Length: 433
Ligand code: DLL
Image 1 (tube, rainbow, N blue to C red):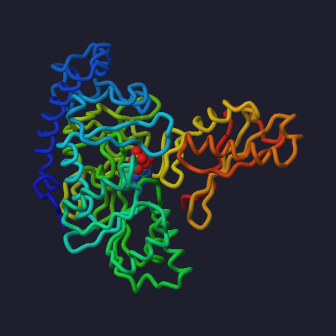
Image 2: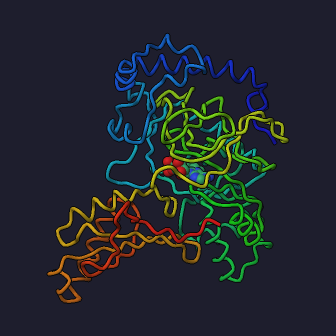
Image 3: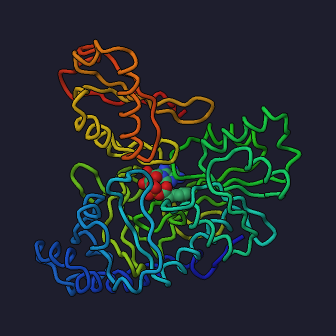
């Protein structure tokens, strides 16, 4: 099933022509409408007329999450706010999230690329899709929602969590497809087993899973336990949300919707563009976005690109499944977490010392974050009741900043291992096998 043959199977030469044209338009727009980009380009001595097409892409400045934070919330938008009809924010961080905005045309583009994602996974008009990604500021829920409506599927907008309800809907509403994170898919499978429900008795056939890294062996486990075919879908809020890239039935990489999102691979250290096939950091320039066009956005996700035509007929470039990042961002239960955010919460509290360790594990297929932190001497000698109070204060502060609950373990001063070189703050025991 191909949603938009004209675009998804376009000859490469025509794709390049389109990208050349759209890139030039985008550069022109951001130069004139976004002061931040104008300054960045002026600093590099570049005018829009210097960008004649793809071959000049490398002259353009990069954009990072930091740039979005520095322009919080709306300063990178390229249209008047009256034209923005929706905002979302990157998962995690209730402190200063990265805010993204969409015009009506952007929402239409988003629906189009998500409809392609669905068709890639053979989800269409006859399907009932249970959307168990979170709705709200996260892009997962509403992104898949609009795309599913565009594809003509019947949407069951249950949102994330509430496993008892998910199971009831799977049984009663006859969901044929589910959209959720891969770890939640596994959790759901175990919950079904506990309830004594055989997935083979359900209508469920397909999962479109993403928002976090997962391996092929995890795929096999999900497919076996849920009795479905599981597809990897990739995206990030800064670029649009879900709908950036997705697997077709061949499952030989994820097709990037490159008529909208232009990919490059760079060396994260030198920032040089790498040659085709080399593994490095994925960078995107949006070439059709109106509300928040971004030039050379550094995703920090590591992958490589394959420009060969796929057996499915699509000519869209494919990216290899993403399993690593070039920074220290953790994805815990679909929420993006930087160790530095945790550190800043702990440093603000007078009772704790700046010595901490984060342990990430997976219990019953759910990610668990444990924060171990040293408590100052005189607090540690306090009575248990006081320590319990301190624990819940830390827990609450972390929850407010991360949007995620963590287990807190208070330890005596000088008990966490010190390092002589780079400190190893994170122990990630979730084996991505
Ligand atoms: O996670 C958007 C999304 C929603 C994608 C639903 C797929 C399904 P953010 O919260 O901005 O957006 O997080 C983006 O998540 O840079 C990757 O590190 C990671 N990520 C997303 N999809 C995948 C995937 C959404 N399929 C960040 N495999 C990205 C590996 C993924 N990592």
